Length: 204
Picture 1: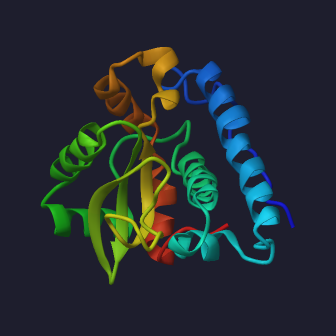
Picture 2: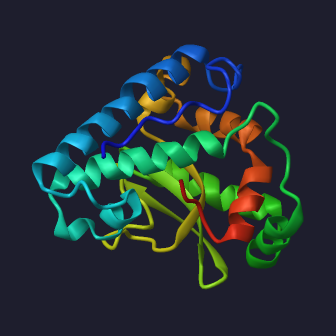
């Protein structure tokens, strides 16, 4: 069965002024849709249509490069849309807030470390907050890799991620990645992140 592009959980312009409508349209309808289409084709071509997305990306070293790139692109973006919200921003609450404070010392210290992971990722990639063995960790991955992949630099269940490919911000911010990351904090959906923390990860 072919993979499907999920709908955005809000309108294209809902995250303005932090993320603009045109970027959201292109990012979701072109980039994410392209990963979904190419992933479905790669699965058909390699007799992998019976495998779930999580199975595919957890064993990417056993599959063609198209599975790694497009499977990661599909999974990463699906999480990305969910961890943003028009009602986002501010500071987390609940269990994930307690875990962040316990692990990183304070929300401010966590935010600084996560921001640096996003800014220091050379070229295209993602920064992540992951849960592994009950512990939170911050890291980043190149391209469309993610911490579920057995080849990833950081391992665990992602509960927050930011896309730092230029297509995620270039129309509004050009080459100013720091401005994009700073604005992104205003749309982080902490209720969803807290839910993912309690549930031990993201599945769809």
